[in-house]
Image 1 (cartoon, each protein chain N blue to C red):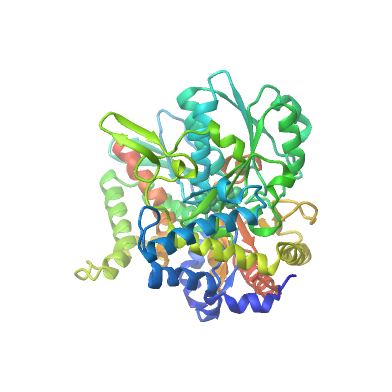
Image 2 (cartoon, chains in turn green, purple; image 1 turned 90 degrees about the horizontal axis):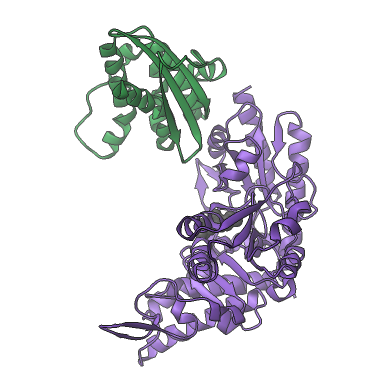
Amino acid sequence: MSNLEDLYREIILDHYRNPRNRGELVTPPAHKTEGFNPLCGDEITVFIQVEGDTLVDIKIAGHGCSISQSSASLMSAAVKGKSLEEVRATINTFKQLMTVHEATLDNEAEPEPVNLRALGELAALQGVVKFPVRIKCATLSWNTLTQGLDEL
Amino acid sequence: MSLFIPSQVRSDIPLLHREVHDRPIVYLDSAATALTPRIVIESMSRYYETYHSNVHRAVYVTAAEATDAYEEARVAVGRFINAAHPADEIIFTHGTTEAFNLLAKSWGRANLTSSDAIVLTEMEHHANLVPWFQLRDEIGFEIRFLRVTDDYRLDLSTLNELLTGAKLLSVTGMSNVLGTINPVAELAAAAHRHGALIAVDGAQSVAHGVTNVQGLDIDFLAFGAHKMLGPTGIGALWVRRELLASMPPFLGGGGMIADVSLDGFSAASGLSKYEAGTPPIAEAVGFATAVHYLESLGMEAIAAYESQLTSSLLTGLATNFADRIRVIGPTTMEARGSVVSFDVDGVHPHDVAQVLDQFGVCVRPGHHCAKPLMKRFGLAATARASFGPYSDQSDIDTLMIALEDAVRLFA
Ligand SMILES: Cc1ncc(COP(=O)(O)O)c(C=O)c1O
């Protein structure tokens, strides 16, 4: 069962059981974006509050599987208090982590090695790429955050 | 006479001989699609290998054979549901979904106006909802809903009120989420008392018990081969023969015309007016083989066997997981089929299914194309296990072991 342990790392289960930054922010001043995964019915709402160049607060609402929920929780912890530039950089690194697998499958040129250290706890999600069906679960909150930033 | 020996059926299904994750596959997703016996696959291969040709309008030998096989399949499928005129009442479609689209776009568009009403239920599959919404959005009639009670049954207390002035009641024979079997004969009688017609979604019910459209006294039945041990890509709309006169053609194209000129077309008579284009011929052959196979097992014997398995599963869940797993559906076997949805406390259905997959166990997580029903019970999704005639107790035993693991992992 080593495979499953790759997916359900302790950090992931912890963030699923004790999600960080759960809740809502008052809009405005905060900005609210909803994301759906129509395949499994997962729904995520990302509230972000930006002051100047900084994402000062983030809250996550909604429901979903352990992967989508823990990914959202890990994301919120990783981006809160960061500059928008740093937030975008984290998003990019995370997306890269999620696409490594596809690139390898397609036999394309070796992908750029992902800077796992820069990802910190987020690196726990790397096992998801071995379960392609679940990648959409992991990326839901990230895509929703990206959309929110684009809407600002 | 029934020849139903579960172990024999099991060995008839090639796919059950494979392994996943180095374990024997435990297939518990027959409500999504049922596995195919070897003879069904072979009958389709035989078509491709020995008489593959298009149907109709050809004189050569293999074309005549293909046409005969296609029309014989119609009769076989019609007999299976005890149609009064099996050769004249089965319209082949690509599946249950297309059967409902045909019903809505042909019968519905010709017979409903903005002042009419139809009755659906809260437990319908999207296939028996969306085509009606599409037509309603186009011509604007009223859609009323029979609700579902807390014990997972249709709330019949409003039936007469809802049927008053309605032209159609369209209802599932068996819920693909709850497993609830609806009282179709009673619903048909009520609809007819109010001058309404009744359409039944047989996608689930037809595969798991005897279907007698005359005995039930219904007007339309939609169903598909792939949940009946047949191939994907074919299904049928059975229509009571007298009603065909009120149903204009569905799709346009070759095969459905009597004449075409640069001024326009006239439609063919008979069932071909609903079957534009080259039909799924190999699939019709496979469909016929599948219903013959089911008949050889005996639908009553299948129903009794699956009922026994379902009862064992319900007991197993209650005994081993009393405080962790809640069944979303009736927990006794009364008017209940072999679909069991459940909610594992604190574990999302996606995660349940993921853990089960490691044990080779195939169950389906999701909303099962019944979002209004999910909403009714405040759920985004359930995990669902379902049986076919090839299922057995060992499948349930492995499911229990796998569920223990899922519960432990997320404890
Ligand atoms: C009750 C019910 N109706 C309709 C359908 C649709 O069948 P299909 O997707 O084969 O057209 C299904 C199966 O998914 C079903 O379970």
